[in-house]
Image (cartoon, helix red, strand yellow):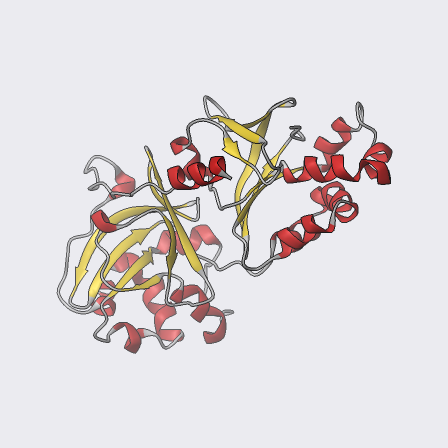
Length: 311
């Protein structure tokens, strides 16, 4: 428990959003303009899709209110990057939880932003901030590209992707992906506490999820039948919990991690190797490549790995 508390404290670092570099095309500073937040956004062509979405969702009047508000504003390229090329098929009901996930109550300057969970005006969806040498990110894969655009009722920080609230739990995501059928089948015969923890809406977890190919490689030395045997339930549960961290850790947090990280398998830790392709390193299994990262669930985040981790 002491190790876990130390890790959790160490992972909560204070973010200070650096001023944008004039030589970096991705970090173009937007000059401040007069007026409330919708007026400022309407005056800048890069926010035309956002303004249209706010209008369709009938949120313009809200953001014209006294506030103050802080808006993480996706530019037009961000909507395209997310796959939203038209608003025609998105209703007010579909747009509202997305757009409200970009708004924080209060005026939060870049220098005052802290890492970790941040509550938005969408009470069903928090966002998660982290910073590394490449910048500041939301939910691991959304970059802040300009900061502190002033308005009469708050601030705008520009982002390069759209925050889409997750709708499935960790277990539901795994069950919906055929690449994780081996992981799911093993979890179902392990201690029920594994599924309970991974299904909990209140938990904030990180799961390093081995693919089917990763498990087939493991079966060459540890047959699946052995893992499924009733006598192996403790071993299987131990292995599965070794792939779980008891808090959300996004790929953009990893550069700030030093030393071993506690897992949900008591007294067992993982380390990371970020020298080239990011890797998570098991105590006896060695390094596993992180092949996909920051798959967001309602109760945590999944990173896909290509080798089963062994404590």
